[in-house]
Image (tube, rainbow, N blue to C red):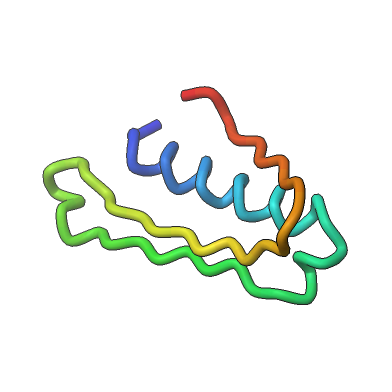
Length: 64
């Protein structure tokens, strides 16, 4: 599997986990922006916006 595919899969998994982990997060939108202009060089640039309320927050992500 190509590294760019793994990165996209990981980011998608993170977004899905963040949405499923909190009922309040379901009311807000998580945005994922991927810039693939450097894809021929096997580089992807991603930006994720995850709305959060004040207070404790636990984020879980895959170990790469």
